Image 1 (cartoon, rainbow, N blue to C red):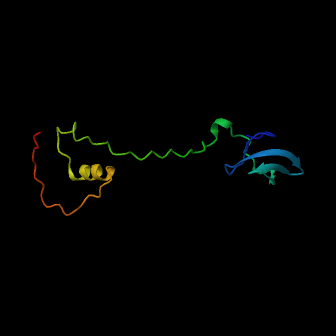
Image 2 (cartoon, rainbow, N blue to C red):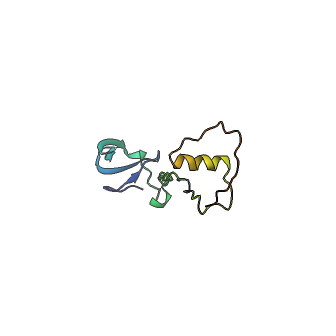
Image 3 (cartoon, helix red, strand yellow):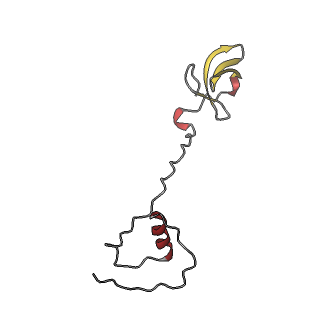
Length: 109
């Protein structure tokens, strides 16, 4: 596509804004600077719909916080090692790697 004062296509796929013709060249704006481009470097046949879509960066997902563990209500199952480490870290504790065994006990009040 070629049109003055509108984004126009070059054969190499770049977009420029043609401003005026000077002999065999077209004075164009590219990245805010005026440049001179030969007339035959424009793609006159391409339409706006045929332009390659400019990729938009995918948004980076927010880091997920581990679900808060409530010892009063989450007693239907035991946590595995990874889950228990996440609970300890989220509560401000540093999990240890030297645990040999854990005993289950019940406190009656």
